[in-house]
Amino acid sequence: MVLADMSSELSGRVAIVTGGASGIGAASAALLAAAGATVIVADLQEAGGPESGAGRFVAHDVASEDSWKALLADVLGREGRLDIMVNNAGISGGPGNIETTTVENWQQVQAIDSEGVFLGSKYAIEGMKKTGPGKPAIKGSIVNVSSIAGLIGGAGPTAYTAAKGAVRLMSKSVALYCAEQKYDIRCNSVHPGGVDTAIFNPLWQAMGHEQGKAFIGARHPIGRMSEPSELGEIILFLASDRSSFMTGAEIAADGGITAGLMRRSLLAPS
Figure 1 (cartoon, rainbow, N blue to C red):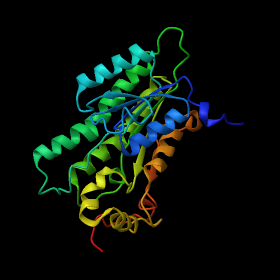
Figure 2: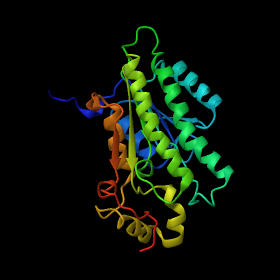
Figure 3: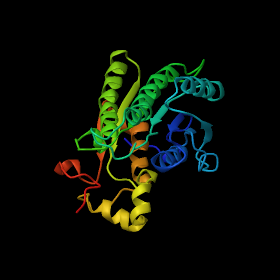
Figure 4: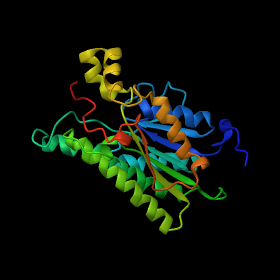
C-alpha cells in the first residue's frame, strides 16, 4: 500500500488540541494543520495561539465542564464535525511529595491533568458522533498526553504522578468502550520523558536553559531531552489513519528511561 502525501492526509478533518498555544500542544497543532486538518487551538493562554497560524484559537478551561460544552457547540456549529481530539493541557503542580502536597494542590492538578482528560474524552466522543448530515462516517482518534510518571513510580510529584497514571488507564477504558459500542473511535496515550517546554521553567530559571537541558538530558539513556516537535510527530501518527489498528496503546517517548526502569527522578541530584 502506498500512503498518501501527509500534506493532505487529514484534509477535511477537524481537530481540537488542548493546551495548544505552547509546547507539545503548539507543535502538534502545527503538524496537524500541515497535514490538512482544520485545527482548533484550545487554551487559557493566548500566547502563540491566535498568532501561531496553526488554527483557530478558542479560550478554553479544560477543568470546566461548561467550557467543554461551549467548545463542542462552537466547533460543531462552525465546522460541523469533530474527528481528532488531542488532550494535551496539563500542569506539573510542583514537586510536592505525599507529606508536603496540600489538598488544594492535589485537587488543582487532578482537575486539570486527570478530570480535564476525562471531560475531553467524554465530549470528544459526543462530538465525533455528531458529524452532521451528509458527512462521511467518522473515524475518530483521541490522543491523551500522559507522562512517564504514568508508567513508573517515583517519590514525587505525588499529585502529578497520580493524575498521569489515571490518564493511562482511562485511555484504555475509553478505547475498550468505543470498541464495545462499535464506534469507529480509537483512543491512545503518549508518555513523554523530559521535553523542552515551559513545565521546566523553574529549573531553567535556576540553572539557565542550556545547562538545565544538559542536566535533564543526561538522565535519559539517549543523552538528551526531546523537542516538542518530536512528540508532535507521534501525536500526528496516532491522529492519522497510519495508526488505524492501534487503540488502547501507550507510547513511551522517553529517550529510553522506562526501557531501563531508571529509578532515579529526572530532577534527582547527581
